[in-house]
Every structure is written in structure tokens, then in C-alpha cells.
Image (tube, rainbow, N blue to C red):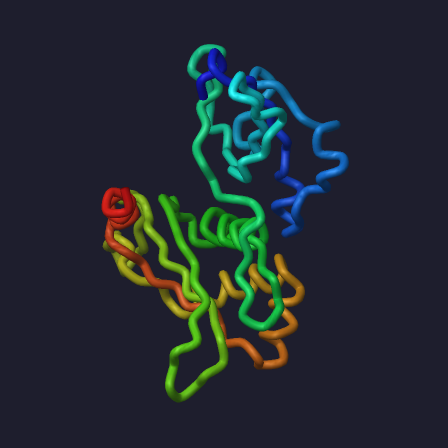
Length: 205
């Protein structure tokens, strides 16, 4: 963050993210915080004002405060608001998906997620019901116990995927309805190599 060139305000959205809802635009400005008021571990939507003419402008970026360097908060980009997965009108917001993924990775898988992306997938020949496919990149420290050994995560078990699917059903009731009626398949999760998203961003530039 460069507070000398841009005036920042931050809208806490942790409660909205947990419930899978988009913030109330009419009351958002009433709850904004200044840069020195950020709390470590909290998520915020960024609102900026600058000399170029932007006034309380929402980019849609959601950041996480990961700590402080002196009095300056350290942040990382978490996701973007207003993006949806929509295979059967279930409208899974990115907030709802990230909430389910974060809960699963942190509380059940006990892994450290670096990055992810999710797509709607329709192309199976035998079963044409839609499903989500999420591509996940984990930190090198994420391992799975195999007997006495600790092996680097290269794939997920069926139990892992069932846990993620369950949490997503809880995060978005419409998705849960389509899963319970069999109209959507269980989510699929694919682990990619360390550095995949970094290489992808370089190619996109």
C-alpha cells in the first residue's frame, strides 16, 4: 500500500464472506476503516480516493491484513468481489467459494494454500451434469502423512474432496440444493505444481 499517493478506506467483509453474501452498497461507507485501523487476519474490500479523480472508488479487490511492519499494515490480495460460478443458476459468489475453501484448507486439511482458480466443467461424455473444478497450489510445507512418512501433496483423496464439497454446500444453499437433487456432480480438485500460478501470470503479462 502507498498511502502517500492514494487515500485508502477499508470495508470489513469477513462476516459477508462467511455467509457468501455481497456487501450492502448503500451502507458500506458507514463501516469503513482507515489504514491504521486494520486488524491482522481480517479481510477488507479496498476503497480509494486519488488526485486523478477517483472518489471512494471500489476496485472489487479483497485484501487480507497479514501483519504489520512497524505501523504499516502488510496485506495480500485474497480474491475479487462480484464474480460468480453459475452452471445451473446457483450463482456461487467468489466470496462464498473462498469461504468454503478457506475453511476446508485451514481447519480440515491443515494445509497452506498459495493460490487457486475455479472453472465450471461440462465436457464429460458419460455424465453431462455440470460440476466445478478447482485447481489448487499448496505451499511446500503442506504434506500428508503416509505411514511414518510425510509426503508432499500432489493429489487429494476422495475424503478431502467430499469435505470441500460439503462446506461449499453449506456456504451456498443453492449449490447444496443442486447437489442434493443430483443435478450437479461433486466438485473436482486438482493439485498443480508449486510455481504454476506464478508462471501463468508471467505469460499473461
